[in-house]
Amino acid sequence: MENCYVRPFNENIEDFRRLGIDGSGMPMSPPRTAVKSTNTLVWALRAARREFFGYRFDYPVEAVVKASLPGSLHYYVSSNHLWLDNLDTDGHGVAMKFYRVHGYQYNPLFVAWWGLVNLRRHLDRPDNRHLQAFFTQIQWLKSQAVLRPDGAIVWPCYFAWQEGWCLLRSPWISAMYQGVVISALIRAYRMTGDRELLALCESGARVFEKTVEDGGVRTVEAGKVLYEEYPGYPLARVLDGFLFSLLGLYDLYTETRHLHWLDLFNEGIAGLVANIELWDYRNKWSWYGSHGYLCPPHYHKLNYLLLGMLGELAGEKSLTRRAELWDGRTKGLLDKIEIYLIYLVTQNAARIRLPRQ
Image (cartoon, rainbow, N blue to C red):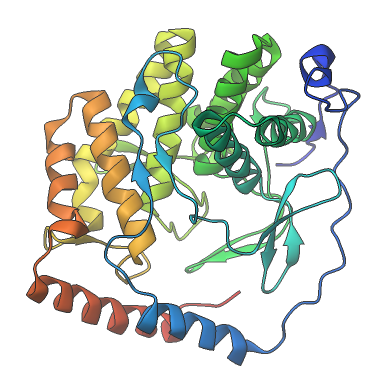
């Protein structure tokens, strides 16, 4: 990430003026002054409350089948809860996430996600406020794109992050974040025809060509390619981030029909099929990457919903079958008791074993 610089993009002003958005460019606002909680007991109690009283096998996130149709503006999953906790907006209406250690931070994943949430709300019930909120996030993503010397466009996080044993130092990138940003920009392109958005997506996908060692997000396991949400060592290997990144590549291929993007998508699918056992717990649930504990319900539901959709898109029946086996809504009482107890034991053991932020 050395010698990165912000690209001076030319804005497609008229598309945004029609929506009442300033097309002159949106600077990154300085992070608001945040009171960081130093009371770890408070955060620990909140976590315990979620685990003991908020645990549910059917988290409120659903697959959106029509998202895979040509030209669709819908995204692949929909939720009124997912990732919206501790999410606020700055003075420009851009999403900011509150972190216990870092305070309020811009994270390109949550900016893109907040855009997709508002687009979905507009599609469900047309409202220009939601549409404007979507394009506000798109404008920020355009203005904050970084062009590296190797020609790749990236949307970095400018704060350090400890993920398991891996410490990512600022600035760092993510296959997941690049993929979700690409999906958001593709939908904006479908609405506006702004080809600069498409060019951003194609340059943004260049990180999938490069290994982690070369500044990309690509690794190899058992001779097959995987894309890393957290591209650093030791590898965290979080599954949902990998799955979201593949959807970004799929969106880019369906819009451009360039076979190179399909090849990158297919490489990832082959890696997923070959290595799915890394994340499997007894054909019942999924592991949270290499962290050594079972996924919380919202991550697990994302895993089997996205796995099933990718299986359908790629024609890989082994993935759709695994998604069916993981479906938490089909579990009997004994399986639920087993999964919950293993989750509690492994989650709390990991809290003791793994480094903390």
